[in-house]
Image (cartoon, rainbow, N blue to C red):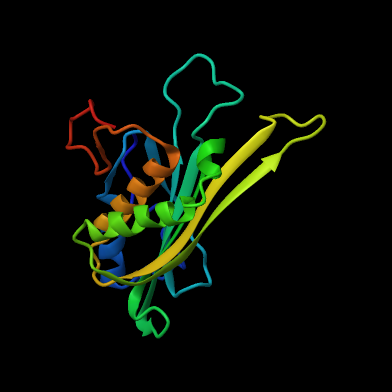
Length: 211
């Protein structure tokens, strides 16, 4: 996997005067390690939610196969946005706010479980609380949807999706635990089997075996 370049996707207003704390937070996001089948990359962040912002896109990649099945299960993706207001925000109760979005295809049996929203929300709470990344003001929603295709529309006749939207305030610039918690929830939502993690930090000079 290609190492993250923390400069990609960062705010660029030509001034180059981002606060040191914001740069430290972005750097910490680039040091996160996630499931090897989750690909993280910088994406364009929203421009009007805070004075400074940075965003990562996440996608669950399919295992190598000569054929990708039409009715494949487990497609999942998400994004994690870092917002920073040096002056603080009363609603955030802090200066750093993380906004997460996850969408994943799920099977019919799971979609029909009335406890699915509670279980999915517990994934996020447990992932955050199990790491040394102090946070506060956590809130969000979990939505389970089902759709039926009719007529000449490609895809499975029935499809079910899980959506999780959440935001919380990080109490320090150490964002690595928050990115890793986000990755853990995406892995759960996608139904990925337990596996080793892949390090997203740049490889040492001369090391061509990692990426």
